[in-house]
Length: 218
Ligand code: AP5
Ligand code: ZN
Image 1 (spheres, rainbow, N blue to C red):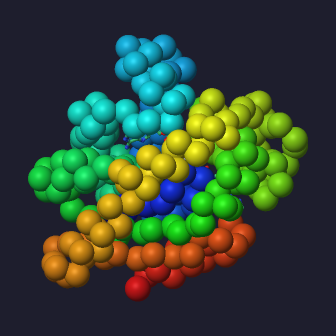
Image 2 (tube, protein in one colour; image 1 turned 60 degrees about the vertical axis):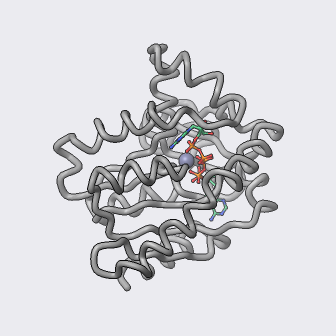
């Protein structure tokens, strides 16, 4: 299964990725998680990316495309992968198309912007695994601790309200055009193009997982 999860910041891509990757036995490739790991490790990439991420803008296409190409060449991607937060611009999508990366599905998770602010403001994450929780909607078993490792949960630097607004603007301008990009490709080339599916992303986490699994089996 080669799958792209498309959706605004806070739409639930990371949350659903956990279930879908388990179900299909594929690795989650989250460019956001990869960048946050680089920031934490203090690598040159991390130092450069931190400023951009904290402002809510996008890291340059060249850097991201290089990271992903390297990642999908690894052995665990032989049976597929799930892209979470990538591609995010037309040049990133073109880079995959031109490299001949075949896609089975593009799954869009659609959540209205009003719901997103509430989701992001209550988010807490476990940086090492990328697992995410929500204070109200998806709380950890023990407050402030990751369910699997018991390690502390943190709030992301870019989850401040002003930065979230900027991230939503960036999404509308640079990422939303991918909806037409992939749905047009799916219609134009039903044999070799991806299948495009859009689901309503409001409801409980379980309801959305069920919708996703149904969309991906059709
Ligand atoms: P990235 O990490 O990709 O962030 P994002 O796209 O803004 O998405 P989020 O991770 O905020 O949201 P999500 O959809 O994963 O939602 P989640 O499941 O956590 O990118 C961060 C930054 O890195 C970018 O701004 C950019 O600078 C850079 N970057 C990354 N990729 C890049 C690229 N390709 N090119 C250039 N730059 C790049 O859910 C959110 C919250 O809601 C959680 O608390 C969750 O528990 C809760 N929740 C989930 N589902 C539900 C539900 N059904 N009901 C209620 N609450 C729910
Ligand atoms: Zn995420």
